Length: 466
Image (tube, rainbow, N blue to C red; front, side, top):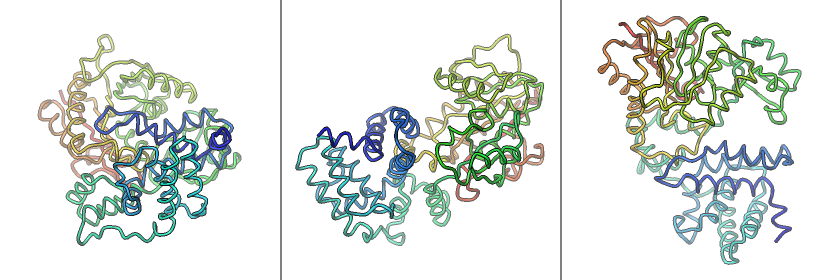
């Protein structure tokens, strides 16, 4: 057994551990546990000797199983003699890993995938009968897994989209109703694509053109982002990007184009006082700090000490100044007094995350149909608590990374009804910027994975008029 255990401190063993841990820490109906990326980062940190190919396979397996879980379960249900909801959780995760390799990874021989599944069952010390069951189902998957027919849109429209795009039924039904079949299927395909690896250039230290040249010397191929003037897309690299000297020097950070563009809507300028609520790990904070160039002040507020610690480290790595941090719950009266009023206020609101499913596929299985209403209630509180701190003439930028209307325009409209001194800036009144092309006539900013190959972001610029 020790020999098996040793041999399975590898990508498949770690992928199984990550998936099982995520499921345990994110029980249905329970509180939100860690993101899959965080668990993968922990696994890699605990096993620094893992080869680069095994690191890549670990990410491929864990993320792939999470992304395609619904389709994998559908196929497993056709090959398992036991209903999958009655399977031992570890057995189910092993079979999902096996099904993913057989259905989606051509480079792994079928016999090897099945043998690895049995070895995983033994390494996990499952009873011999369960190991034999894994072997039997694995063999059936290898024989007929790719030929199993999926539900047909003509007769089962919700099930067809849910299985083909690996979605929960409620989300498939919602998209079909809101978007219509054609766009719902386009979105379903888009959220299962691997997103581009985009970075934002730290223009406080280097230009985009110069960073592209530096990347080239590091063996990294890049291309300018299509929309953001601050972005580069990494096309190919060998090894971990976090080990690159350019990263260690603070020349860039990971950020989707949509997030880069949304921050520009705040129209920040050097010398301004900016309050940011929901600063997180500092993606938008650091962007604003680049724009201000050390002139002015950014007060970055978040309710999690760990995230603020990550933010401080990020700012230090990027060599950015002019940022103060504050831990506080922004759904309650803010602990602000002497700071006075702010020229700009950014609320990066907690949300259901339906716009970032391609980056965080686990959200498909964490979210429930009514979650949007719960987030909307919190979002309204954040707006109401923060509004008094915007000076007359100042701007409030409300941002989410969800496509749910109840968390987006509905929240904004309810806020405007409660605070008539604020008004939504229409597109024509907003300053020209690369983000302008994503503004609807009334002023809402919206991006989507199916139309723009970006995360699904929403934003609204509100001006305090009194």
